[in-house]
Image (cartoon, rainbow, N blue to C red; front, side, top):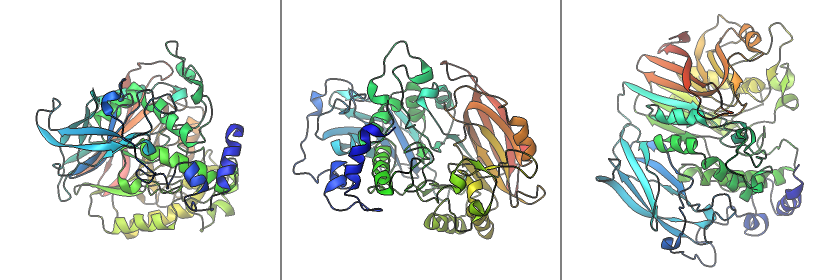
Length: 540
């Protein structure tokens, strides 16, 4: 199914080293990666922003990665977002930005100018400094005579701050063609400090003219979306489709996001440089570079997260006072290939091989070293795939998912041993990927239900992926029977909010009744509390 792009990728791959793009020639230049940074061309033309004839802020605004004195502000100029050039000239455009204490921008906290470069698809990433910790700000952008929607954001608390409470939400998996982003409309109304996006922000699969199960009758999506994303242009256009969604825009405008990716931002179940379809690694790295580039362009990420060819360092640490340390993982870029060819399989010598890794050695070391130095009450691990053991049946013939931590048991053991040796008493894992809500007690030894509980895991369902779903999927009873440490399982769409206090972590599982039709209400399907110093989920 890659036929249209096959030749393009093969031609590019001929110029590519296995792990690193070569000189300024070949694939790097042709596909606009590392070499094609602003200012490296023969000339950098500037276009007059006053000549932009249509609203360029069609994709809204976003903020992210809060620190005590700053937060990233994002927008992208796209007067015609569904066209390959965005309706923008091939030139840089000056964008002005403002940060204010109030929604009406009468008391400014900061302002400045930035260049929106064609090399970055006219996206801008502003990192204003000198903001006050732990407070709400409002921000907006101007290009020519156009003014963007207003975004609301919030800085992180000071490092030494003793917070009484922090409320976050976890979201993931938003297949546009599987339904409306209704959950985001509700999320925008929640009172939150920050949102964690745990992956599958977009999907690589074709989206038809009616938007899949959205079944549009008031618009026709162009044919550029009705193919799998492979090239840089494909991925850039797909972000435009997703970001034009008003519910997603509302959520980004309401809260700062801390994002990480899973697989569909590139391709389903890829592992490091190994593609689902077994493309030659060099060819797959061209695709990965395109996907990573488009991801950075379209997310509120800081400069250190900017990709270098097919590599990008997305794992990073953010602190919220003395209350929480967040270690955001990337379990895709460095992982060993899935055991037994992926899918569900009985554990065996291949999946149990101690050499297997989900994080790579460097990230694993970084994580455990960070825990050793942590003074936070809660150590929170926002990451992608199910961490706790998840058997699909009782008895000895059970199978496990080879794509989740179950397929990398030694990797999980090293992380749990590292947490224990670092004295991490209050471990909270946040997870996406599986399109269902789960609540787990993380056991030191999953084979022994009586073993020590090492932490708790809140798994959020999808925003849209999997269509409407059900409160009790077909395997509901089997999963709960096979996994005594699983305290909850629900298959509707929605999100999880987690409230961290000095004494408890509380998870509220929010669900919507439908996503194939717009406008469904939200309700809380279940709530659980875990006590600091005595981990384990109890119904709230």
